[in-house]
Length: 244
Image 1 (cartoon, rainbow, N blue to C red):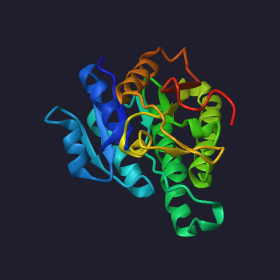
Image 2: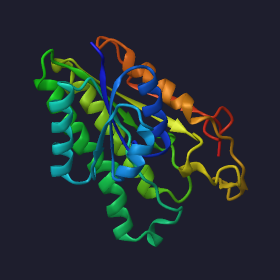
Image 3: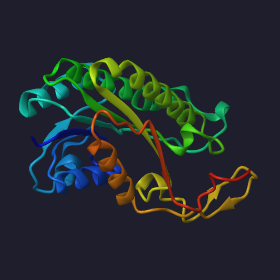
Image 4: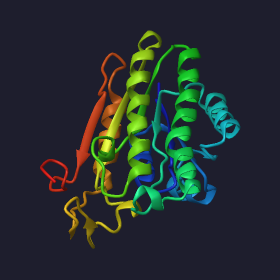
């Protein structure tokens, strides 16, 4: 049976690259994101289920997952990927409205999509599936001025650990991929220079986002008796392993 995956944030960046990998591998793919035109660009004329959806809206999320159940018959994998960041700033310079918007996507959106996927996987026959959450290097250590984003990614780790535990009795596996310096729009400034812990600004290396997509494809293809709870994939020389 052809396996099915729903990818959130599929209109650009990591989501788009991951969709390409799964479509090329012959999976049935549902593309979820805010912008229908961007999702259509990701599909590129290939057969995919396009799901315009705001992940912060519980009703829209439930409706989108309902369409997946109706059209695919089951959901084997959720790549819980949608997220956003904010410009670096000290916490007292961060507008509360900006924090609420970011946490709505990075925390509430992750919760709502995981909730909908877990429910489908628990009720479908045969029971089970896999949820892969997009964490970040920031789920381990922060960059300067990154309170909202770093808080949100630590929350994702809590979601991953708890779903990994709660999913066992339903044959649901949950893992997290923590990504560092993939070449996407979010990392566009890195080759020009990024603020470091010592106050200096230095250029940082990037890696091809296709490597992230290949890693997600590997995690998704494992039997449900096997799980990768946490995977870190990063540009080798980025300032993560080391001091300062």
